[in-house]
Amino acid sequence: MTSFHRPDECFHEYMLAAVESSPDSAAVVEFVGNDDVRTTTYRELQTHVGDYAAVLGELGMDVGDRVVIQADNCEPAIAMILACSTLGLPFIPVSPRTPDQRVQSIVDLAEPALFLRHKGEAGITGSATGTGCFDENELVIESRPAHRVRRRHELTVTDTAYMIFTSGTTGCPKGVVMSHRGVTSFYRGMLRHGIAGPGDRIASTSPLQFDFSLLDIGLALGSGAAVVPVPRNLLRWPTRFLRVLRDTETTQVNGVPAIWRQVLQHAPSRLAELGLRGVLFSGEEFPVHELRQLRRLLPEARIVNCYGSTESMAASLVDVPQSIPERLSIGPAHHGAEMMLVGPDGRLVEDEDVIGEIHLRSPALFSGYWNDPRATEAALVPDPVEPRSGQKVLRTGDKGCFGRGGELYFRGRVDSQVQIRGNRVELGEIERRLVDFPGVSAAAAALTDEELTAFLVTATDCDERDLTSFCLAALPDYMVPHRFHTLPELPLTANGKVDRKALSAMV
Image 1: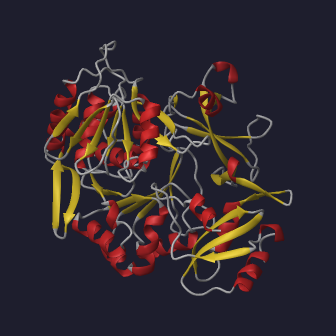
Image 2 (image 1 turned 120 degrees about the horizontal axis):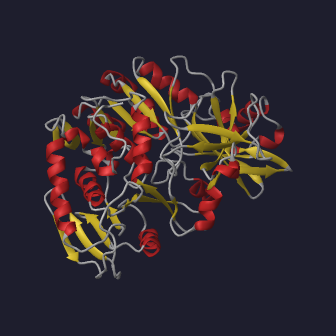
Image 3 (image 1 turned 90 degrees about the vertical axis):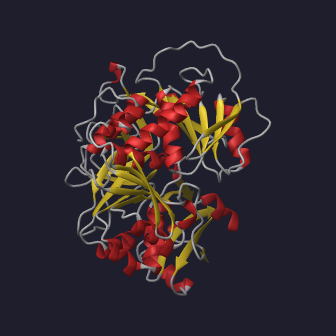
C-alpha cells in the first residue's frame, strides 16, 4: 500500500495525500481535442479544491448538508466533490443525461441544501434548494441555500462522505449512504493489491454518478497516479476512444466490459499498438470470447476482475489468469474483507459447487439506505458466524459457489431468476450459451409474455434453427429461447450495463 496514507483519513485527505510527496506530479489528465491535453498537478488540484471550498464555506451550510453535483467526470467535478468533503458536505453525483424527472425525484428524496451544475448544464427549476454553476475557473452561486442553524462543528470519519442513488425495487431511486471511514477503508484495501503506482495514468470511462468512477479516482489519486476522465461522447466511437488513450498516454483502462466491444470489432490493431499495462473491469460479466481476444491483443497487460456492489464499492479484485478459463473467479475478497456463502437455512456453505448467497464482512460497508430503515435492515444483517456479536455483514443478493481450490464463483442474482414451466432459470446461463455461438458477439435473454426471447448482436446472419439446435445441445428445452431478435448493439443504461427494460419494450 502507498505509504503516505493514514488509517483515520477522510475522503478528501485520502485523495490529496500525494500533495505532500509529489505536488508537481500529474493528478488529472484531460483530453481536450486532437493533440490537445490539459494536465492538472496535485498542487493545482489542491488549490482548486480550496477555491471552491472558500465559496461553499460562506453559505452557512452545516456538516451533513447534502450537495447535488450534476456533471460528467472531469477535473472541476473532482475538485468540487473534494471541496464538499473538506466541509463535511455529502455530495450526490448526478449525470447531465439523467432525465429531469429522475433528477427531481433525487432532489425530493435527498432534500439537498445546494444543487450545483457544471457549466452548460440545465440544472433544476422551481426548487427551494440553493443553486450554482461551476467550471474550471470559478463557482458562481445563483441562489443561496435556505437559512439553517448549524449544529455540527467537527467532521468525523463516521460522517457521510457521499450518496449514490441507484434503481430501487419500488420504482423510486434508492440512496446508498457511504461514510468517510467506509470508502477509505475500501481504498486502502484496494491499494494493497498494487494495481497502480506513481506515473500511471488511469482512464476512467464511467459516469460520475456510477460509484465505479469513484473507484477509478480513488485508485489513481490514492496511488500517486493520474486519473484520465474519458469524455462520454467519445466512448462509443472506437477510433476516437483509442485516440483519447493515446494522446493522454494512458497506461490502464477501467470500465464495464461493454466499452471494449466496438474496439474489439472495429479497431483491434490500434488497441494492440497502445501497449496498455492494465485493464480493470466491473459491473457485469465479461463475455469470455471477448476477454480472450482482449488478452491476445494485450498479452502483457494485467487484467483485473473487480466484483462488488455500490453498498461496498467493491468486494474483490482478482487477477485474470493468462489462460482464460470458461468461468472467472470473483474471490477471495479484497484485503481486509471476507466473503461468505450462506444457505437458505442460514448456515454457512463450505462445500464445493453448492450454491449460497454471498455475504460480505468488511469495514467498507455502507451506512444504510437514505431514509429507508426497512431496506437497510434487509441488506445489513447479523453476522451468520456469530449473530450475538452485533456485527453486521452485507447480504449482497448475489449467488455464488466455491471451486475446488476455495475460490469463489458468481452464479447470478437471487432476484433475477425466472420461473419457466415450474423450473427456476438463471438468464445468465442462457446468455453465456448464446455468446458461444459462432458470430454472436453479445446476447441478452428476457422472459416476455411467458416466453423466452433472446436479443443478439451478430457479425453475420444466424439461422434461428441453428441457434435453437446449439442451445438444445447444452440446455434443457425450457431454457431455449422461442424468439430471436438481432440488434446492431444491446441498449445500455447510463452506467454501461445492459438495459433490460429497454429490451423488454422491443417485443
